[in-house]
Length: 443
Image (cartoon, rainbow, N blue to C red; front, side, top):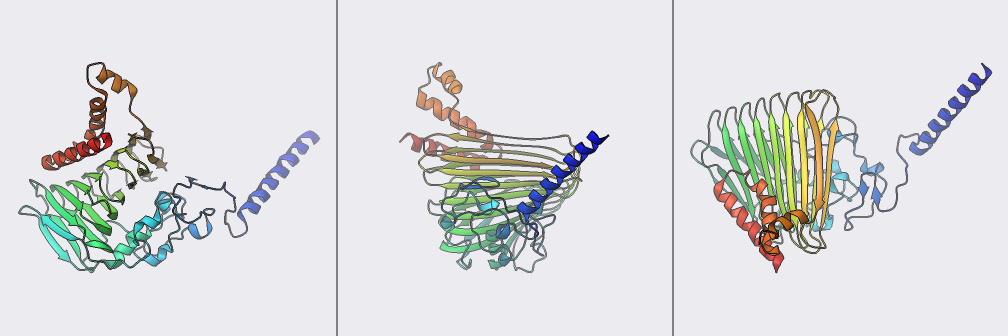
């Protein structure tokens, strides 16, 4: 019995010492005081050398939630991310924030530091009969129906826009030929834009957002997919070489609705697209596709979020990228959250990157957060590498020259995304754009 007492006392003492160690590390105020290796954050390596010197996460970078929205505990999960319509609630960007750790802030051209009072980009809308296009003020009730900004740049755009464009697909209407919104940059002064796409119940449509020209733009796009509606949104970033574009694109998906989002990033100096989709009723399906092709010096960033907030919904994510040239840099961060209420969820996300030359860097971070075990399935995959030697050997063994074989491999690799668009003229245009990129890689 005395030996048992000795063992109990020893274990009790060790537990008490461990608790004291934790208290010493965390401190009375609950703040984590761990010291990280220089050049690293708790999320990983410091990958944005143009940002300010990083510090330990916590303190100023542990964000409290704004009254503007959000839920849960700050930084505890993807659900706990701060949301607010107010720019000031986010404080100053330093690059320590998880959302910005890959982004070279100095290349944002003032989107995060200046008033976004530059001329709004020109907007041309081509829509068939039956589609309603309106230009409304900030007080329109439909504004804010799909999402709340999750970062400073999106909140700055929300504060700065003076007029929004609302595209409505009426209930029960099937749109033939699609709707095209052409956004043309109006200069290099930081500017804001707000778009709303409202697909009412039982409607069917394809909406294309086509970005081009020179601009420095922060943009919010709200998408509402009504019950049993089917909506495809294609966002093409085909900017001039000096453009900077940050676009937060929020979607809410109703009961038994189908939503497909395709993001294509080709042009621009720095392009950062953050699509999100949130299920609001059972039976919904979401497909998120992406294609990006980065040349020397380009920074193309994609951060997406799928919020399984209700039961019995499905999501599928597939993004593919190609990189060529010195300092070509792509970033893909995929967050999928399965909340405890989301029983019966079926989800999978994949990112693939193909490095065509030396000097490129592709960062890929798939994140899957599961709060219930009662699901149909969940998974993620990521791969980054050069050409598959077996593919090249197979083609070359059949008499195809190496350069032609390489082009065939890349073309096939990216065509899987292009064919999801289902707009023949746009698919042809993007195929030609990929061919031009491939031709450039050979010169």
